[in-house]
Image 1: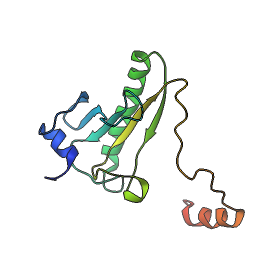
Image 2: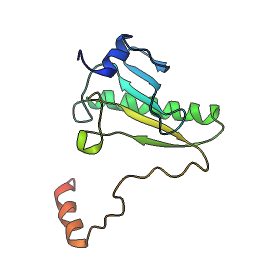
Image 3: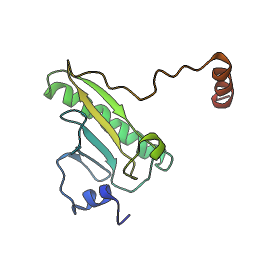
Amino acid sequence: MEDCLFCKIVKGEIPSKKIYEDDELLAFLDIFPFEKGHTLIIPKEHYENILDIPKEKFLKVCSLAHSLAKDFDKKLGGCGFNLLQNTKSIAGQEIRHFHLHLIPRRENKGLFRLENKSNYINEEELDEYYKKLKID
């Protein structure tokens, strides 16, 4: 897509700090990081979100996240990680190009929390969603 920020990064039209690149994937540092080392992993082809990306490509992104996490753990002296993926604006997706956040976490930096995590769902509502979402 011509106006996609990440497609422009893939084409080299916008500079980035590339951590990893191959024929299909690109990983680069986020310029608005939650934490130093916050990396975005993207397919080079444009897919809007997790609903659009083919399963095989999604698994390659996840495999790269796994490899990078192991590598970062060694290079950063042992740290934790958050993996985050937002789909659609209601979930916080700002760039309409599938991307996975790999966020290294260090001690004494506070926990990464999702908003509204404290919302309680009663048993009846829990059962309703269980019936809707259960895979038979």
